[in-house]
Image (cartoon, rainbow, N blue to C red):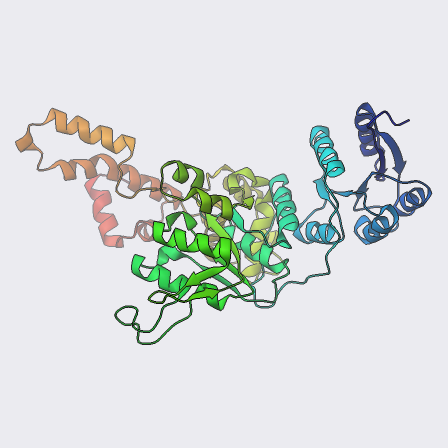
Length: 467
């Protein structure tokens, strides 16, 4: 019986434990719950009585949930449908949303999360399913790999926002795959067949950024022999990805805000406004909210860019995806059957690594290991040593700073001429020994990793009496 304010909910799943959990949870909320173990049984119930919500599994005996989704939409009309799956990927998530699913649950899930999704679905108006959209041929394929919980969440976010025209702010650490996420959004959007241009403004000098983005008039500056269209003009009707958005100057931020708010810009050296219809995706590894508080990024631009936000998880938070990623990289290198190449010891070492460079670093490691292994199974000794993380190449770490301050305090001003040699003597032996250990004592490989000649390495080892 439905309590006051309760709803009628249909659960379609062939796992009795899932159905029992939903039934207990939703009845405690005052809802009436019906259970079906197949799409056909669920459609039969939907034809006999109205439902306010349907929770539908993808893998079912008989017709699968995705194929049956349009039939459920026709039977329950404006009621929301929540899709469940234990085998989700980006394609499944996108197809579910396109067929009219309101939300997407990935098994296994906590009941609290399931209850939150059901509550949200019941109070959110249903949006009609859009026409089918296929990936645009002009966009490089987005090879997002992984089935971990964090990646499932990412797929769901992409599926929900892809076919809108909202600006998207893609957040994530360096090397985590922000540009791949941008491609995925474009591939599954209504603008998939239109122009897609990606640009990193930080790669240009301050004087050229505005010209690159908005174009320039003839004679606008020295060397501007003819007028030139910018990125936004060339991408009219399509999508632009602005990478490292946190590094834009104040002047460019103002012009970009005008594009987002009014769809209008002016070329450098021109006064005539021009119109453009461009969807803007922005990516950054920086904390834009912190930059806003520091007065280095416009708050109004931040709100415009972050109409939708997607956070790409770092590799250390999705280590379950390591085997799939290694397989994918080996296949890209031409190894059609990578399974025999991957030892469990190799994966164990990968799982213990910090991965400050994220997926990009992993790709480099796998490619290096595959070359060194020469067709043999990948082993720990084939893994290159991790490179030191240097957020600011001019800033000394705490160990170096403490050592230098100690030596400066101990010596008189006139006795510090050999401080550099003392520093090398203190730290270089440890570096050499660590690299030699990582390369299994192979001096040629160690010299290559250090970027020095083998003879130089030999002399250094003799100097420090390192065997």
